[in-house]
Image (tube, rainbow, N blue to C red; front, side):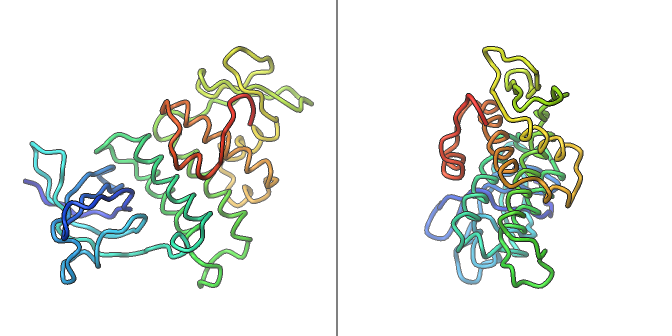
Length: 256
């Protein structure tokens, strides 16, 4: 039996009994972990009142070599991102991001860059505008840019980063092929999606990681880029999660 400490975001949880929970955690140094939190719902347990979805905490656990279920022994809350509890759009983004982490990544495989991107997203969407130190740019614009950044980093770290490529100069539309790793081409094929060149240009800016320059992307282009990445993720995992449709509505395949 091995004991270890780490920090994590809770991405799933289930009631195990009246006093205990089974939880899915995305940790910085251990990746995805499934654990049982015995007695976590008791008032005096060392779990900060229970392990809630989309909260960030330090934790301790024990790992058994013959089991894929760890035992959570301590959960010390750091952040609970209050707007996710009260703002519907923030709630939809947060649940979508947590769902993608659990579907795209493999258990026990650390991805500290994805963990950092998830925390950055939750902090952006989950803090109110009047909190000290919050960026003065409108929350909606920050939310969109943070979600693009998160989706891109998740795809990159999992080995599914869209290839993109050169765009035909002066063309209003181009063609994105999810079956060919997100490669862009000037001519359509039976497997390509017709997309606006401005959508691909927005993604190129994300790929180049120009930081606050992402806020200069036209809001419509940014929204289309998010939808395109989500549709691409759908192709990668082979299904459309409920959280994806809840956030974006129906994502048609022919265009983005």
